[in-house]
Amino acid sequence: MPTPFKMNFRFLLAPLSLLYGIAVYARNWLFDVGFLESHSFSTPTICVGNLTVGGTGKTPHTEHLVKSLHNDFSVATLSRGYKRRTKGFLMATQASNAHDIGDEPMQIKLKFPETTVAVDENRVRGINNLLQINPNIDVILLDDAYQHRYVKAGLNILLTDYSNLIYSDYLLPMGRLRDSIVQKRRANTVIVTKCPKSLDQAAQNKIAKKLNLSEKQELYFTTLQYGSLEPVFDEIDTDENSISNCQIMALAGIANPKPFFKYLEKEHAVCKIMHYPDHYHFTETKIKAIFEKFSKHPNKPVAIVTTEKDAARIKVFNNLPTEIRSVFYYIPIEVDFLNAQGNDFNNKLHEYVRKSKRNNGIHSEQGNR
Image (cartoon, rainbow, N blue to C red; front, side, top):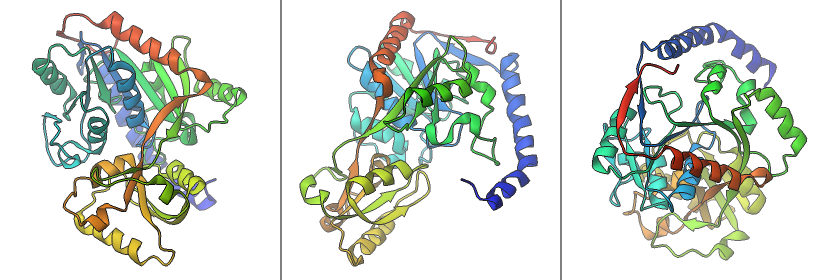
């Protein structure tokens, strides 16, 4: 629960949120009336995004789409590559790292090496380049492109975090909404993410009522499934049994690390938690400083356990001494659908791609009418 001070401070920001809301409304209106142009593609395009600032689980949901589709279709993913050091269009290769393409695309490339992964802050240009390089792509997944209305995706999947549902939030800077809740109308599918596994039907119905979706919009609920500990650096042998009953340090540089920390504290003996900002820029010096804290901790932890996204950024430092590399582990995650609705979601996903797939091409249309 927010403290009275925080609530009062939040409402002091109301005038700024009003100005921000006017700007957001004006931009969306320009797209709606066709003054700003949206581009549609004959190649099926699926957008995974949210209305809030970070933390809704876009990457694991994008990975679920890749996992569901890649055996039957040629899949490509495109994102802007947030906080990468490069600009423009760039294809991921086996030699790429998180500094080149961003941590989220790097995570997808590591997990699905046969999948085409590209980054471009200009999504229209990115899609055009992808189709020029490989005209046989069957479907393009747009990661975090819900506000990027220059592309009109064939299927829009909107995510909202169970712990911060969009109907309970405010526009920036009062809250975390970067777009108006009205824009949920553009979604074909809405997914409530990071739900407790015990979320019952009555609670789901309550959320569904407050979301107030149209009859044409699909609603799903998902939770995060944590996997087994994996070494951050590939050449390090893992022995989960030797770690499971020992002290560990927990490290995260993601937008909402609470579920990750909560899981670690449930499954392991956590002696210290280190939380850094989302997409934190680790350096060798910083990693060595973290290891120094690890080495001198009085409870003598045996491992530093981090998130899969952080691991994608940390593993670029493969010149670190073995004694440092050997203590870094991460926990992979994947999406699990509540109510056994995973097959239903996957079937509808496949149905969309099959129905939409045709000869590649591009046309523009004026706005979303």
